[in-house]
Every structure is written in C-alpha cells, then in structure tokens.
Image (cartoon, rainbow over all chains, first blue to last red; front, side):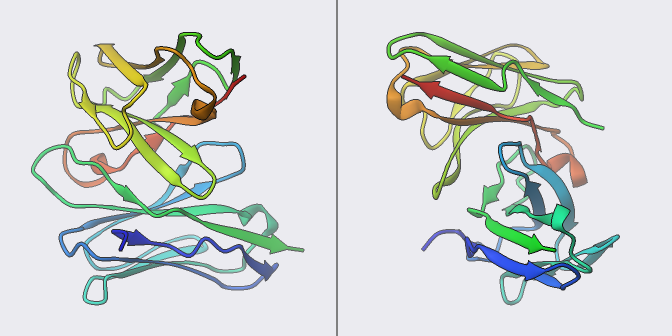
Length: 113
Length: 115
C-alpha cells in the first residue's frame, strides 16, 4: 500500500460546481499537509498549506484535514475552467530539521464551460 | 514570493551526451531537490541537498549526479543520457525552519527529450 493514495481521475465537472479532491494516507506521523496545482507542462504551484488537523480557507479553496481518518480534502467552490489542472496532495512529518514531503500521484480536474 | 528558476524549459539531447540541468532559487533556502515526473508515476525524487556541498540520494539516483557549490544553485547531471531519461525534470527548494518553511516551491520544469 502506498503511503499516500490519490484517485488519478480525470474528474470532469461543469463550471460553477463544487469540487472535492481527496487523499488518504497511512503514516500517522504526518503533520504538514499541502495541496499543489499543476497546469499542463508547468511546475506545481503551492495552493494551500495546513498544519495538523482542521480547516483552512483561501478564497474559493478550502483545505480540510481529518487526522483521525487519515484523510485530507481540497474543496473548490464555484469552479472555473481555469481551475482545470492536476492537483497534487503532499504531506510530511516533523523531524526537527528538513524533511521530504510524500506526494500523491495527482488528480486531473477538468471544468467544462 | 519564492522564485525557483530552471535553465531550460525544453531540451533535446542525443543518447550518450552529458546533460546539465541548472536550478537557482532566490529565497536563501537550505534544501533543494530534483524530481522527475512521468505520466502515471507521479513525482519521483532523484537527489536532494540540505546544505552547500551536501547531497543525498533519493528514490531513483541511478544515472544521475548532482552538484551544489553555492546555496542558491543546484545542478542535476546526466552523465550519459539514455532514452529512458526522457522526462519532465522539476527542481524544488524548501526552507529549513518551522511552519510554512517546510513547504516546497517548484521551478517551471525542464522537458528533456533524449533521442
């Protein structure tokens, strides 16, 4: 079993829909959780970052972490065609120094007009 | 804003050539990384560096080497390029402190084609 599981999609939704993207993980030591957005042929860009459990909101984006279920989500409200991209989740554990995130393989999202 | 730049967006090389990919970050980050990204396989870590002149192997270091002579610059070297090294190469940097210093920032990527 991979440390981080993410459905590759593609997930196709109409413009204006609420999108839910999810990752599950097995390592209970993970405490930092990130979502990256990657447009085709570009590098990933950091969208959201959360520490430990709870929610974080930034505009149309909400990141949610449920450590008891080892499950994280990214919600996109009022989705736009410009949101069409691959979304990567990533997570890492504190180690007192530098440490390396573990990435999901990404979910492809298509928002059609 | 963190800026990570990569020397080339697209590169075409011949089998057996020595290839240099350069990455520069402007945020004084201690940690730098090289990944390759292939369809269906996600991001795979090749090498990382947590300080100048320090390097550590990632998950797939075979056929690659790295160099970090200055804090802001991390180079990936393909000693003798092979067709199975055709891929998207991504550089990332990360601070060494707490909180959002622990998030990685990526460059735009280099699409390498080895013929």
